[in-house]
Length: 114
Length: 114
Length: 114
Length: 114
Image (cartoon, rainbow over all chains, first blue to last red; front, side):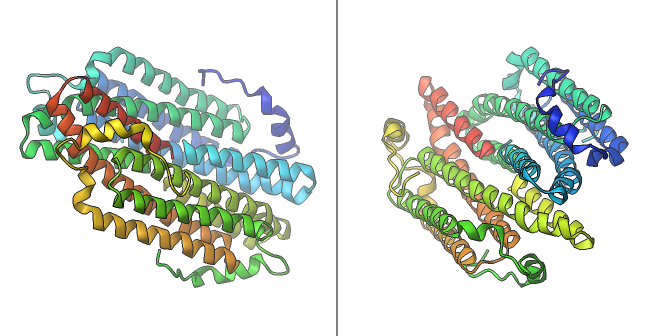
């Protein structure tokens, strides 16, 4: 991932998702931003630990904590996504519904593996 | 994890590790710092995506990429730790060796679960 | 898990799912059974490796392969579940829909952590 | 993994490991066999659940429990491996020591990803 990721590839999917609606996570936008800001702080804390030549196991413990925090954000986004975009597509029906479900389960598979 | 984690709990272990030596990762310190800086950038990129109300699935894809980058840092630190601190303790022998191995496998278990 | 797990706790959810329908995975029942039979064979293969005192790293490689096979079964079941039970509940609407989504994301969270 | 996996590829490593010694896990051989037998039973229990058309979420819960049991076996094997083969190689020193550490961290990376 670069600092400024392009996500044009899925713009159509995005459009079809918030046609007349918003993404599920928008209602909690400021809470997600706060959580990601804390995760950014954890990344800075890790740099400080490395710079201060802290004990490797302590650094690993913080990496595990940061990974857990990231996974928790992912689970929140996923729940919001399923309860909004996927469900909306399911109610509308048709091939779009199947595509949304496939897309969501592919994202889950990436999370399980990562 | 707070922004300024305390790691006093394992200070003794740390001391016994770099008694007369340095942590395994120090040789690559600047490379680890660069990788963590990039991960910090990914955390900022995620905030921008949420702020710009990007498509949830694209955000999840970036979360997976960031998690993978973090895990790669953890694996590097772990390899350096085993080949330095654990091996040094093993060569020295005694109860310290067993403690180091237990500590390392506990850290691995946390990584596998996170 | 015991050899004969009780699943009475979620019987109501199960009933509401296949009211007038079947679980999503039933269409692929024989394929799931074949995959689980192969996984059972992997568990037996691991016992043989331990009994023959094979090299630990080779055993670990097979444990990773077996874990991956299990996760693939889980992902298949999950996709079938979302595209049937969750979507059906979503189309029906009401509190049942929210409960199904919560239940599915809780299951996903368990998979991500395991 | 087939039912009868070949592990000839690492036979040399295995030999160098138990030259004059045994694998770390052998001392607990019967306990590992009992745990793997229980995991085999879980695989059979899952087949019964699919055959009885149990609720998908309950099956997923058991898949997570079985994955956790497998990971616990892997962690045990890994700890035994590090405290015997890796440490023995470390004490002996030379390129063999580095090879053992690399091999162990590669196995850990496979576990973290699976």
